[in-house]
Image 1 (spheres, rainbow, N blue to C red):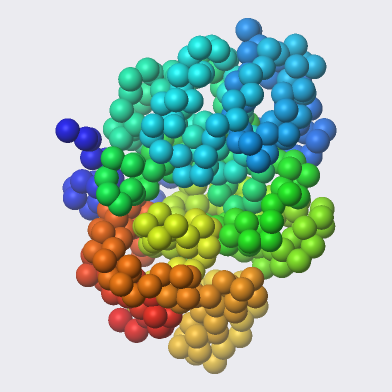
Image 2 (tube, one colour):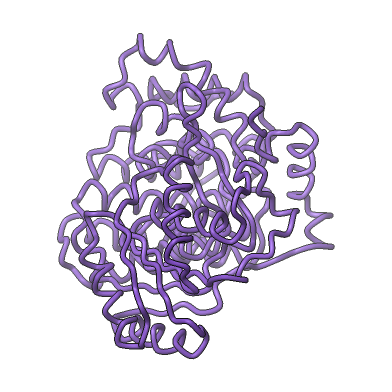
Length: 419
């Protein structure tokens, strides 16, 4: 029998909702982050020299894919110059299935590294986190990983992450998003534990220059969704709020530049910072409905993750508004002026819709090649997957599968949420 993810249990859903209350936040808080974050090519070299003093056997297993393998080889060279033996494994894939995680862990076991290095987008970093668990704990059921159960990682290796996109923030978060392909249609699952926060994150903007415009836009929207949800979720904190607002400001200013001029190095650098700052924000508060809805829709209908979650930003803001007025603060922070709350909400939602359209991304799902027949056939499964997603419990407005299904139907047609 396949184990259920810990966050699917009704009692845990209730407990997670309770943890978002103000009374609970007064008695408990946390902030997880890597030991160190390095930036630039010199920062990358500094990490390899630093880790050389921390690792006895100096064996680095470097994960990548064929698209960015050249960057992985560049990183390998840095570690070789620091007296590391290296292995570049280039078989990473988008939204990695559990079967690929096991294959990667087997390769790690044969090489026996004391440092694992992920060079790639969020999927590669998430794959590294999950494979690291199986390398340290052979046979462990990833579906049973819980932030409440210690695993005792780092007996064999440390983890470093070099993002080559500017969106997921996985280089600083405690989650790994995988694909459970044992169900039909396949669904995304979240493996989460503070122990899988990478030890080191390295931001090299040159590694992101090769992203095509669509991927640049999609990953940037992912960072934006992280920050918006982090700011509006019931799990918000003052620290996370400050980070979220800074990230939103950076995305609005620099994503259009990176999209239009791929070799604009300032824009690329600032977008890497935006993604990492957003990761620190939502990694210590929580992503909410933009991600539970985006996860389900993106997986079932093969829409890029960042685009899928970006589409749900305006709908989520509208849905949250009936339970929380914090959207007013968000609007003020990004320079929106309005005579009352209704106008404020309208202008805020329109700001995000227009931002999507500026990258030629429609906010109606039906305009993404999803036929009505295909939509109707999969709607029940999508609603179920979204309702069981770990992010749903972080919604500032209590939700239900009925509301989720209705939100999905509105998003398909591009209608404003009015319930």
